[in-house]
Amino acid sequence: MDVSELLTEAYDRLPDLVRAAVDGLSPEQLRQQPGPGANSIGWLVWHLTRVQDHHVAQLLDTDQIWVNGDWAGRFGLAADPDDTGYGHSAAQVAAVRPESAPALIDYYEAVAARTGSFLTGLRPADLDRVVDEAWDPPVTLGVRLISVAEDDLQHVGQAAFVRGLIQAD
Image 1 (cartoon, rainbow, N blue to C red):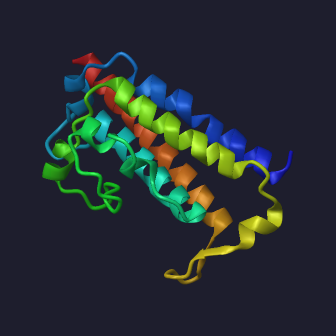
Image 2 (cartoon, rainbow, N blue to C red; image 1 turned 60 degrees about the vertical axis):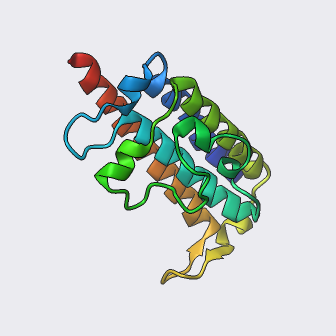
């Protein structure tokens, strides 16, 4: 297995996990917070998708999917390319209002398709390219791709956990 296949294997697991976390839930369930100040399923899946969209767009030096079309409108938000959810207050979490589970799934699948295309053909030497010099040590492509996958996996797991909590009520 080469590096491209390995990364593709990791990222290809996410769409099924996203669908399992949100499929069949109502807009109210997607927005339900399991406790005061806690993240909703809708916010968690929106955030993990925004992080992947934002970071992969930077790697490709292209616009984010979020700012094209009416993605933001389907979440009750502005198409702000800098808003990925990092540092959101409780009020900002509550303001993420996906219109439906398909809105989350469709946005994630659009982002995942672009990420999959990017991963195709990566070689080991590509992973050593520095993509962000703002950190010490500077962030390489390999580190960035692992960081995004790790963030996405954590948040989709949290979304699945919250689903269990709200469905138990």
